[in-house]
Length: 296
Ligand SMILES: [Zn+2]
Image (tube, rainbow, N blue to C red; front, side, top):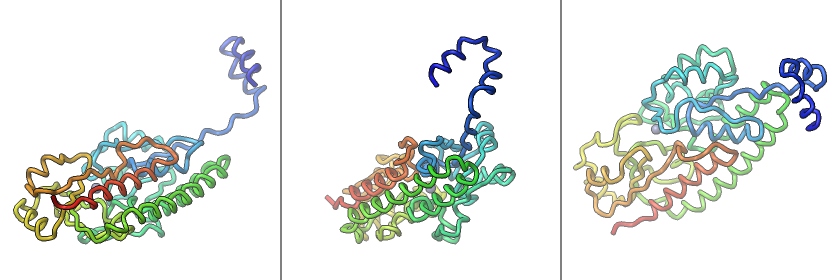
């Protein structure tokens, strides 16, 4: 094979494609281009396409999906895809119109039968990827769609799915074991992004600083919050990478409050077969450190 490529390389450039078509076996069709709306879904998809292709990301990792606006390049990325994975119109609102007009298969996580949605003040909580059982349902749907689009790699997608499901079983057990002694600890969150994770691992419902899923923290009065933090004996506040711990700490003025950053979007992770599992493990570890803290 190598020697044939070298000899073709010496032929006049214009003849090469024709010759290649005559003498080389037909090349396999390129793998379908998968576009994932947000980073955690890209990480999950990367486990299924491992060894075949790399999923594209539509909204940048650092973009807040609650307040995203679709840029022309992101619109084009969606339109160039052979398959789209997104949470649904609950979260990636600006993508809805473009996705509705796409002629390609779309996996809408919030509409899958096996995805269980939590209620957040009257509307479904969009952070559904933080329950690994929902992630399993997405992975199963995604693998099936890829197998239809790309039968040549069907075996690989199937094997990747089985490997992901097995690793999630182990990861869930590990997180459960880590957090079990901390289940009754009171805690607070700046933005209620972790309800799925909280429910799956049996943690106490945290006090939420912001009123709704899309509101900025600091909406409630700091005085009221401080009173509740003190009354409930809360020693742990979980914030997101985009928020400033020192700023919140000075706003809250709650002495002894341990502030931990948890990256529910997996912003810092590179896509790869293990990345979605790493997102969950890092979340478990952030909660272990934070919930394990006690008042000074
Ligand atoms: Zn969120």
